[in-house]
Image (cartoon, rainbow, N blue to C red; front, side):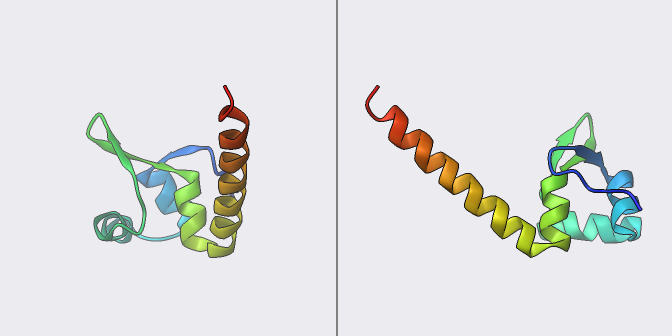
Length: 81
């Protein structure tokens, strides 16, 4: 089984293979906004973080908490510049 890397960029076909879902399911998830993606050259590109958030909400909560903590630290350090 392949591992989903949070900073990796995946195509819809790769996401489909990783999540073990059909092409129509990936399209539906994109249309419903459950997976955020960017269109590049007419094709969707999905960040691994989005796939992990879909299959593992606990990972998403941990990543969001860490991001907010780092952001707050940077804001405090750059406030005096």
